[in-house]
Length: 501
Image (cartoon, rainbow, N blue to C red; front, side, top):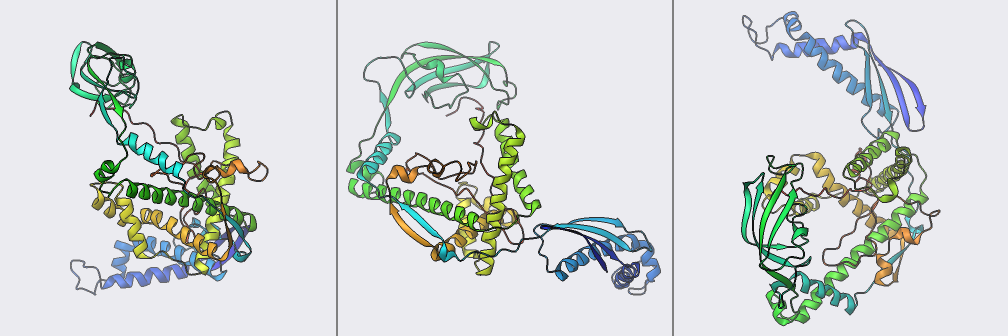
């Protein structure tokens, strides 16, 4: 085997490799001789088939198999001999594989950079913490009172308004003909809930009980019933009753309805949940601060191929957001070149941080246990009630899906390892300061604005509050887990198939 280095620039390497024709022929002959005892050909006893006949029948297939193995083996050896660790799968181009001639091919590969982590004990961080106050508990209980409220008939006759629930009978027509699924009786519809097709609910705002309303709508393109999609329709609607939502009273009886001893226990649970939510925000802000420090304190190049792959992932999500008209207002007037340059900066940061965290994890034998992975899989499956077994089986059969569960666990374990070494000082702040977007606290010169997700800004955590780090691990390689995209476009609104309960 002859290897000639043809490019050595930064992390990019290219080689021209030649494998002697005699070596290829020896491999082909050896493989054909192995087949003598494996194939059955009529007229010959097992193990007595002439090699010449086997070559006639299987020679082309064997040569293809040998060439593929030779390319793989020599590529691995060429990189190993030079102690090069590829960042991604090398790009291989075979330039000659004619019979009787040397096998010639080229490989182009990005290698992983040499990473020398700083002494993490020199990193100083500030952990923002906020205590739960009675006012926050009261607000949370007030939201619960509204969420668990019931509807009651309005005490005094008036017109309906958004937020009311109207009890209606309705029947829909297209071109004067009633259609299947367009009729309902005693249906309770909350105005403003967007449960019916666009335009339906707004035309019932201002109606009184006992009135008949003719609701004219246009069925959306892509409607669940293809026969109605894009057509104009008319619903004859009788408003039978108007009901308004009445908040529940937060007392011992309410608490007991939720399986608790009383309102004191309920307040305690709410406080614990809020404190956990604030703790999650604190954790994400501390993690973001750490990642910023790590990014600032390490200088090494990121492999172009990995950056390009991450950029493509970010760009695909951006294109999806643009298609669904969900772009940030600030992006709508920017050129694609401007936005792509910004995204490349994000991609480079993510790849670099991913490689750094992977290197720290490898050097310190940080691994994700099977038990941790199983717990993550179960949590994921629980997001799909009734389909848990199917989700678990799907993930177990797909290495990429399992990697998507493993990556954030690995990342958090490495972050925890670094935080144990860093100098972390707790600082008590108000809830508003804790929830403030970090970007609002930094000048544009200090921290360039990106579209990476940040901890929630100006939104106090209720029982469902969640936050995420902006810098997930880098794209998949031998050393680094897979990355998340820079910004997640909002889910496209679902087209209503028909008035539904």
